[in-house]
Length: 212
Image (tube, rainbow, N blue to C red):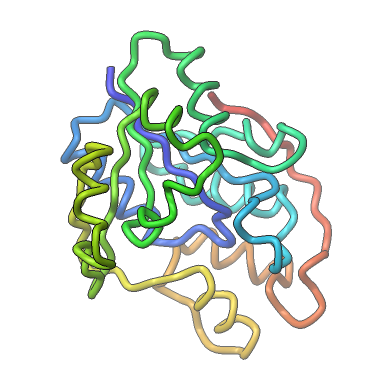
């Protein structure tokens, strides 16, 4: 069994995330891809992240139509910062015979060496670097050597230049977000008034069900 894991704040989840996961599933022959929303992301201390129940609810809506995609709230339920190595170890215990592939953006690969317990992470899973439009994986200098050392698989993803940051800014400034993310997610954002000025802390009570 080959298991794909894709993490992130998913604030909000959008078609870029979904296309990356689907390309990885097909190209790598993954049995399934599990989306793991971050609880307290250690790499984003300066930005307020939308409360977890909203992010989980939007992810659940976005994944509903793909039988190969699943959602896990393991990082949401874990207290403290969310470290990738702890998440991968959790899935290794759940799927002892599985080959685990952790999918991340190519722009994050240069920072992987500084991740918490990075060497341990390299031993227990394979890393997948999903390229984005216009990103040169050969830079900065020396990065290609690191890719060979870590046996990182480079995944070429079709050009979907969408970011969560852009979506939040478009909502804040009243611009349309249609066709940037699944329609149920767009409707959820509108219904709950998310990403508008001073409304990031609005509350909702969806059940945080761990599907994995």
